[in-house]
Image (cartoon, rainbow, N blue to C red):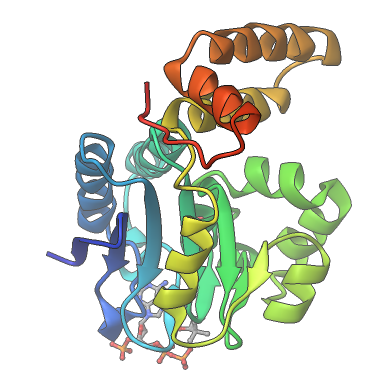
Length: 255
Ligand code: CAA
């Protein structure tokens, strides 16, 4: 196993564990990530934190040694596998946080882009260096990066392969926050800022925001009207509004 899944303080913590290869994504590891995400979806975790073993890398990308000398059809299937596994993060019932504890390159950055949030350690470096290998990103980078930081900045990163350090990543909106060691404690504290609220309201909010990228404003507003109306039907909404009026802390029960 090159992957470690454990639970701490209400969070599932998924650690890519191939530090000798800077946690590079072999196809076996990608499949393991897929199975682990299914396990997290069925657990009572209230948030997912994804990070890398060791102090050097979150993940240095797809395993380049494994990518060599494969028929084109296999390469396409490989891209589709990576895309499908990372897309599971979109449908995960809880929000996901990539804790970038070093290099986040290629497929590693693409995994982080598929998470809802990115936190960068002081030594984080984020890049899509595929162009230096004669390639382009294949696990979602060409689609998720421009949605996050805009077309021109995304193209600059993809065409030059330049790595962005933590401060710049924060400035251009590529990461949400910079965090200091102990990194896992910082990520758990970040998760605790939202994971005490009702899971249903969080799911509705994530779905509405995620669907904004593919919707016209008109259809996006319809989605928002439907999902916000659905939120009123939950016991948590009833409890949240009653607690406000009664001047007490709400007790959300995910119903
Ligand atoms: N695949 C396989 N092995 C990798 C790897 C990768 N992506 N990245 C690092 N490694 C291995 C190295 O081969 C080395 O192993 P050996 O000791 O057996 O030689 C070990 O990890 C340590 O790496 P380095 O000695 O290179 O460490 P460094 O500190 O000198 O450099 C680095 C670090 C700058 C991240 C450098 O390792 C590097 O450039 N890695 C490749 C990054 C990259 O190009 N990623 C994109 C991959 S393609 C992709 O991801 C396609 C896609 O969109 C899905």
